[in-house]
Length: 210
Image (cartoon, rainbow, N blue to C red; front, side, top):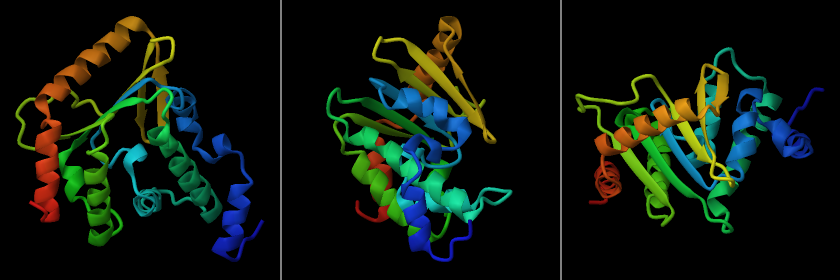
C-alpha cells in the first residue's frame, strides 16, 4: 500500500490494534508493563520510552539502521506513545523509578532544541509523586550496571520479572534466583546514582532554571 500523505498514514496506523503497533521484541514487556505494580528501569543510551516526548520518540526511531519504512515507523511511534498511559493509571497507581546515564542528557538526538524540550519534560516527570528519577553521573568510579539496560517489573501477584533488551533482541527472566541478582544490581545502582532531589537540581542547571 502506498500512502502519499501523513494524514492518510495516520488514519491507517490508527486502525492497527495497539499491541500490533509495537515492535515484536517489546511486546512481551508491554503485556506485563500495562499491569505492573512497580517498574524499575535503567537506561544507558536514551531516555526511557515511558518518559520520551513524541518528537524524541520519532528521532530515536529515525536513528535506527537499517531505516524503518514510513508506515512501520508511524506504528512504532504510536505504540510507544500508547505505552505512556501507564503514567496516567490511577487504580492501582504504579510506583516507578528510572535511572539514566548523565550522557543521555547531553546527546542531542534529533536536535538541541528537541533535546531541551525532552529535558524539560523529564523535569516535569520528576515532580510526579509516584515517580523517582535519578541520574548516574559519568564521574562515578563504580557502576553496578555496566552490562547494560535493565527493567524490573512487579506483577499483580507480586512476582518480579526482569526484562533485558539490546539491538532489537529481548528476553524476560522469571527465574527467582536470577531476578534476585538483577534486584541487587538495581539496588546498588540506586545508591550510586544521584538522589531524586540532586537529579532535579542537575536538570534545573542544564535548563538554566536554577
